[in-house]
Amino acid sequence: MWEDLAHGGTVRRVGTMVVATTAHSAPRLTVTGPELQGMTYLGFLVHGRAEVRAPGLAPVSVHRGEAVILTEPRDVVMESPAPARWVHVLVTTTRLRERGVPVHAGLCEKRGGALAGPVAAFASALAEGPGDSGPISDVVAARVLENLVVAVYGEAHEETDPRLDQRRRVRRAAIDLIDERFSDALLTPAAIAADVGVSLRHLQRCFEGSGTTIASEISNRRTENASMLLAAPASRELTVAEVARRSGFSSAFELRSRVRARFGVPPSELRRSGSSVGRQVPVVPP
Image (cartoon, rainbow, N blue to C red; front, top):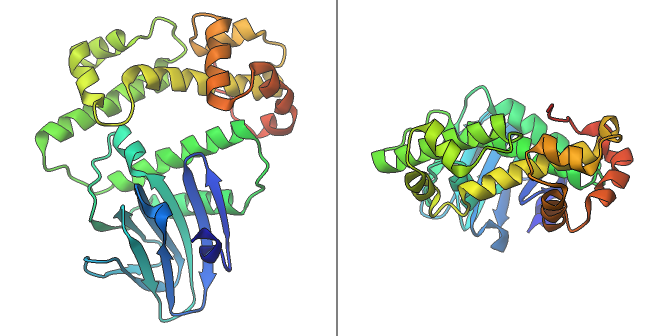
């Protein structure tokens, strides 16, 4: 599918997501294939106007600067009376739910808020940029794009089930706390539960069915920061133990274990690759 979609444009995988651009003069562009399974599709119309169709759903008219969102569609058809340019993003539905987004399969929604343009520009830059930026830059790019997608999806959305909405808000508050305090070695699921104002068991229940756990979110955030510190030339003089401390790990052994599990290489390998990718990676301050 993506080989056909990339005709007249480019395509690139960013973490678990896929970004692509297309510029076409044909009146009809179809996005279809097995890669749509389990994915949420976001299409940003950069130029022109179009009508978006998906099986079983009413067509949606999209104009320049707007985005269309479909959760786990079988295929997507974009019909345009004039040349059009699209930026496409595929993100796993499971990950959106992990981030507290109340996604529902079988819906076609349109977004026209202030974020659509910047997200399209960032995704386009990723799709059309160099493909050899390295694993750390990919981690950063994936995280930024994911945050932007979550923000776009959340614009003008209202959750109708108060129980699901409460769980979503608790998960989002917990992840926000992790982003702020991951470098604190004393940050634990129990500490986050206390700060959010719920019991540890309730916090754990809020993550059930989301594909992740509160403990995994803490570990992943620490691993990301450690990897960025290892790759940054400005941090080259830091020992692995110091990088571990600044990232919230209890020991250098734990850091080595997490980095190898995430990237398949030891910290020393990430540090050696830093000369080529570190200049592009923003380091989170200790």
